[in-house]
Amino acid sequence: MFSSHKFSMILIILCICALFTSSFAQPPPAPYDPYASSTVNTFDFVNSGPFNQYPRGEFGSTYRELHMSSSNFVMSLCFYNTTPNAYTLALGVDPQHWVWAANPADPVREGARLSLKEDGNLVLVDVDGRLVWQSNTSNLGVLGILTRINDQYGDLVLYDGNNNAVWESFNHPTDTLFANQFLRASSPDRLVSRASRLGGFYSLVLMPNGVSLYYKGANSSKPIMYYTMFETNKTLDTLQYIAYNKFKPSFNQQFTDGTQGRYEIVDLTPPQDFNYDIITSFIRLENDGNLIIYVYQKYDEDEGWYQGFSVFSQPGMIYGTPQLDSCMLPEKCGNFGVCENSSCVACPTPPGLVPWVEGKCEPPKVDACSRFGKLVKYYKVVGVEHYSSRYNKGEGPMPISLCKIKCTLDCKCVGYFYHLENSRCWIVNDLMTLTKSNNPKHFGFIKTSI
Image (tube, rainbow, N blue to C red):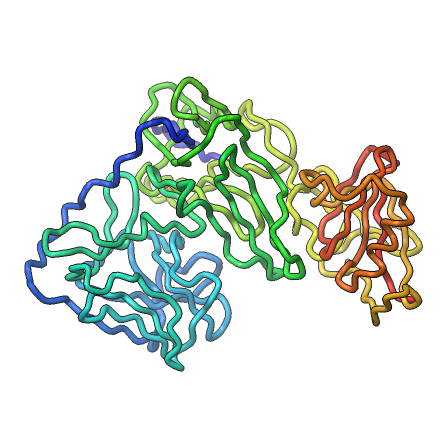
């Protein structure tokens, strides 16, 4: 988790401020190089040509860097792809880790264009002319664009004649928060992950009384909560990621309501010789639903990105702080599987549980849908929980026979889950990871064809 080099320690805090606290100041104006002009420094970049050779992009991506006159060696704007002819316009921090994206859920193709127009609007247009993304800064005095990194965060900026930021990516986070970056109850109030390997999306949402993580599967009609990080009876306004020097050896993450309350979720005391570069540390919601703090560690020739802390991992303690079981992540076992102690251990089948093999455990295919249930049946799995039952009360109380009927009459239902002790019912459209339960009265019923 942490490498062993002699460096000082950093304190990291996640803060939530109540509505009655003073508002956070906006980031100070950047010390821009002057671009004194009365006209817009327009540009037009076509996504084509050779890829950058070094360094290799994150996620195994290839990328093309936009060589703007205001670019710097730490931050760069690029088109990257992980699959052919599907590009994301993203801000990369060297070596290329993608920390902001204009179009994370709407990739563009070869020949797409990014243009800063004469009216000051920055627009991303696909090769067929379709508008994919824009900064909405027309006629607001924009003169140019640059990337910057100051003492604590990286940014893409559209600036005016006074070198003030008219628009900046800092105020529009996607899946990542830099130090001092924030979410607000108004907007933006959430982080949204890149698409998962199964086409779902995860989100971290700042709500009036807390912070929760949600998952929206490919077949789900709405996001489903899979973990609540923090709850309070106060009205919350801001979630902010703060990092600053700390003299004692510690690595700490807290929630605070801005007054007296501090709610600790991470308090690490790692080896004395751990250090990271505060400038390029960030926290990101991954496309598997995990929330990870990334740190950049440097020592002689040994330098690079490290995962400082992950919320979901092997259950237990890490430097005195508990980590959550990664079985809580909806896609831990892919489309289907039973998880226990952060490991996928079994695949439910009609005859019973068999050993789980990655890519081999799939939910049964239902060939047809009948409103009268003549074409489907169910097989039972004892002692399991669906991720939706952790924070969703379900329906009921009702008899188990009615729960079955509700699933049978719903063509989107792939199974139902039932707690015998309180007669609660959960109808699900995605099965995904089932967590092993010690309660033998918690059942899953998997729909299959007759």
